[in-house]
Length: 186
Image 1 (cartoon, rainbow, N blue to C red):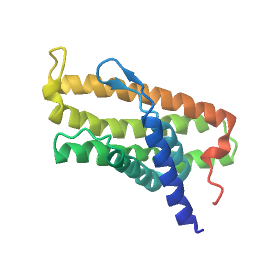
Image 2 (spheres, rainbow, N blue to C red; image 1 turned 45 degrees about the vertical axis):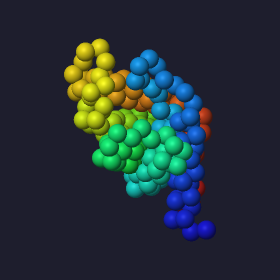
Image 3 (cartoon, rainbow, N blue to C red; image 1 turned 135 degrees about the vertical axis):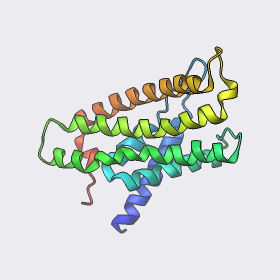
Image 4 (cartoon, rainbow, N blue to C red; image 1 turned 180 degrees about the vertical axis):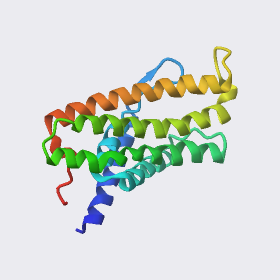
C-alpha cells in the first residue's frame, strides 16, 4: 500500500472513531457538551499534518449525515456546522512538523506543540459553531441573552471543555507513548 493510501485510510479510520466517540453523551446543562471525537482527530492531525487533518475532519463531519446526527435548519447552517467546522478542526496539524522535530530530538518541549495544536484545532472548529450559533440558532437563545452572547457562551464553554479534555488526554498519551505522534512510514 502506498504512503498516500495509508494516510487516507488512517484518516478515514480516525474519522470513524471520532464519530463513534461522538455517541458518548457528555452534555452538560443546556447547550454545553464535550466532543470526545476531537481527541483522535487532533492526535491524527498532529501525527500527519494539516491537510490530512482537514480531510479526516471533513469525513467526520460528513459521517454525521450518514448517521442521522445532523440538526438541520438551513443548507448554509449545515454547511457551516458540519462541513466547515469539522474540517477546520484539522488545523491542529499546523504544529505537526514542529512536534515531530521536537520528538526526534527527545526534547521535553513536545507538550507545547500538543497544547498549541489542540488549542488551534478546537478554536478553529468552534469559531464556525459560534458563527452558526448566532446566525441560525440565536432565535432559540435562553436566559434572555442576545444571539451573539448566547452563541459565545454556549459554544465558548463547549469549546473550552472540549479543549481541556482533549489536551489532558493527549498529554497523557504523549507522556506514555510518544510514538503515536510519529508516523512510522516517514
